[in-house]
Length: 406
Image 1 (cartoon, one colour):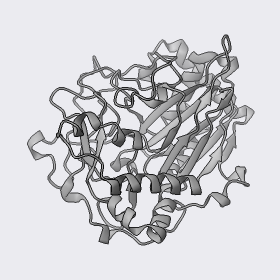
Image 2 (cartoon, helix red, strand yellow):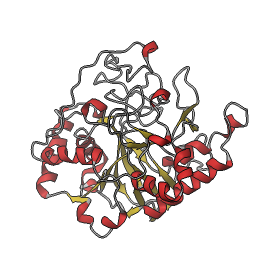
Image 3 (cartoon, one colour):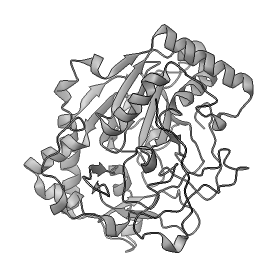
């Protein structure tokens, strides 16, 4: 059974933020805007007094989170789950009932999407994603027979058993769409790469978990790579300890690409590798090279320092190490990939779509929060105990769940 998704918290005054592990509760969010009364907390800088020095980090990480590609590449049964006929029927029935209810997709919950049998699998899976190897590939959701609407309902319904939906962009999308919309991938200070067909380097999204449902494939490319950031850490410690140390320092500026609320800065100053708070802390990773290389408009103006040669070298070593250790997989139509952003980095190859009128490559995306008090990682951010921690929230932009890219 999945852990309870109910918590009771007391809001902390803004001036108290940054003291110990206090946080600002979103429990009082306007239900006329946020149907469940919970607002995505958004992007924040870390609590700098909770960042550990490199000397406190482990020299080697062991256990299921530090997995080796060779343990999985020839053993797909260890990380794939083909949906059974009974599972598809239960999911289909729940989706049909939800659609019939007339409830907006942003209002979907576990209670409104009952899976009495399959939740027995989803509960342990949630823990495996959070604390174990951190990924799974479901196979065989009948998206072509169901169409976008029912597929989206089924997909988000499954997501309610794993975490809380958080907004993925300034438009409030809690159901995202990875699709080439013809935007210029070279304009990295303005364009989100998921809206192009360009290569995505190894990165982690701004949520605890990410899900990708394949609705349509590309003609060529668009394949997926995953790597354990704990295995990457181990390799850096062995071969490039200077790079590992640099990546633990909060000297890295991340672009927010204009997706900011009133009064917020256009960047975040942070580290790449952190330690959790509390006892026996794990190594947490937060990374996206596109977001550190797109800040020249601010460094040229003298507002922030430019990337040093040492940092640029570290970026390349990190990417090369990820490529060396990565597990490669291909998402077929109807596949769903769920993975952790806390200890898994992911990438995709560049791709080319089929010519019209064939559909373009299309993945539906979920960003899910697994807050600290419900079994999630204890992160050195003030919103660690928020239900919808992370994500991208601009002012009071309401959550929306479009059925296709827009």
